[in-house]
Length: 65
Image (cartoon, rainbow, N blue to C red; front, side):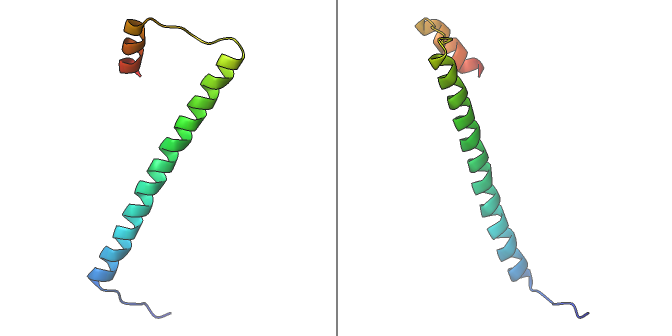
């Protein structure tokens, strides 16, 4: 079996494409996690388990998550 020779430029181009793909995948994962948490919270609200916070408590909660 004969090996194909590639140039450094070709390797760089492939790695650059891979890096872009991985960044997109990372964003998709973050979007899916956001959707999961949003859905979970919405189900709790619909079940009457919603939580209320004062403005100060809400700010503390945002900073802790």
